[in-house]
Image (tube, rainbow, N blue to C red):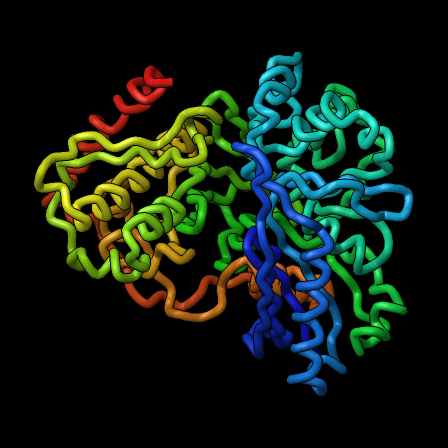
Length: 484
């Protein structure tokens, strides 16, 4: 038996084919563009996702026809919080407003101040969440708002296309500000507070629950078996946690992607919204996770790459493998505002301590340190919920840098585990959810931890130096806000 997992990312879609043990067989990728029509706006055409998904499916079928003939189920993971507004025919009526779009900051603040909103949703209403986006549409595009039959998330839109009916999983919907995160159901109070109706919400399923069967016409077009089923899937971070086996209490994940994520799995729902910690449903039943999110992790290095003309790997090569203490220069990685713990859509990045000797290597170092200090902010916020990992498993493009991982380990004073190269991201997590719907094995046997290549221990020689540098970094929050 074979299974497909999809990772619907911000810049492209990746589909992987695995066997019933989760062993990687093949992958296919397609890219698409993000539109930024105004400052702070970030949009995407949902039809681009469908086209990318079709291309990926057809490539897998063309190269592996025997395996695809035994395909059993598909799981989709996707970037969270996006707003895809569908009409009566399940067609988008406008571009998707993405997770990193901050136009609805005023609506988010108004929602966040309403009674019971934080208590039920378990979270601050961030500008990037879905509910304030719909309020913005209501206030600014009223004619389009009246046409909305269903509001879905990006992964949910792909799933709706696959089976012909709207549904969404718990982990993704936990980031809408419409879900009762503890009870794992839509909250009529939250939905009404956001100017919507419960009839406009998709059907809710767990991530490993079968939601329906692939449309017969689509199966014929793709050359897929007609009995392929589609599972609930997951938001990208929950899927990534499934991909590395972070499903039980205290198991942690550190993601150094475009954004940065520090995630810890929880056996109970213990929200602490005042610390700007995200508390979401996990992709498997009766599990939750908490995470801190920073908006510009590798995005910060990519910014330096663009203005310096050096690739990210070339910048990394300017640095030694082992840091010998923090730089005098400081960088505050708020290129797109910040979530945990600041909840500030307007704050922007800045340097401090630049001097005549501040060359490109020093700028690279202080940017990596700035991201590390921002992740320390996330860790301190999560610790307020009585959770603290003993180690973190590192994923994402930034994890290829030995210097960066050692800097993070020194800054957090926590062991960092680097997996051996292989498939263990959100696409694998989505595939594992597809497997658990068919293979009746305990979830822990399917969602295992990857083989670890090396363990990076905090260098106790420099712990006090990084602690002092972090305390100085914390003062930058107030100073940067004062410049607005």
